[in-house]
Amino acid sequence: MALVLERLASFPALFRVWGTVLTANFIGGGFGALLLSTTGVLSPEAAAAATEISLKGLEIPFADLFFKALVAGFIVAGVVWLNFTARSVTSRFLLTYAAFLCIPLGNLYHVVVSFTELTYLTIGGQTAFVPGFFGFVVPVILGNTVGGAILVTVVNYFQTTERRLKMARGGAHRQLSMSEMLFGGLVGRSYVPVNQSHDPAEADGLNGNPDHG
Image (tube, rainbow, N blue to C red):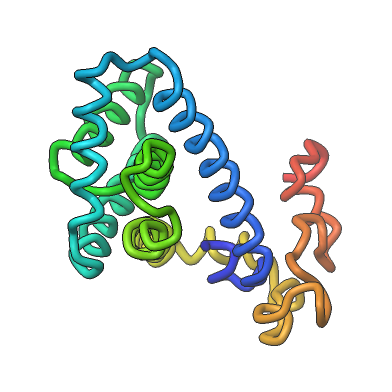
């Protein structure tokens, strides 16, 4: 998102990254649901509890799911942001664990868990996949996206100093045009490589060349 705001990456490039990550998470969650529902990993009591917990999400209205997911997305993206300030592996672990624990304790929703729950219910014959996807998973995707990728990134972006912004931009000649921003590789560049600069010293510096700055 920060690269898009700086016109260094296009929306198609952003959606390609998001789509790849989301698809991979869905595949992993699907396999997890298959494992839990078709093997003896869960006891009968645990399986019944898992079904009960998963069914609760299907009963929540679209708007409520969206805002619950928005808060969860804010927490998850905020953890990534705050981890940069952590000084040790232990502090990062405790920060991540405490923050992620707020999601189930707050009755919030994250899309990977929601998709896994829906798949688990579908395999067990408790619901139909397509209605569940659009009524349960889609509002969670939208909420997570607004809460995480947009809100936290925009807050972080506007707290960045002008000096850092100047280093990122490297001059207006590096930025994508509006048509490139919207259509990416169909009309030109999909992103701006780090070493694409008219200033050799700047390009070497950005690429970590020890001979410059």
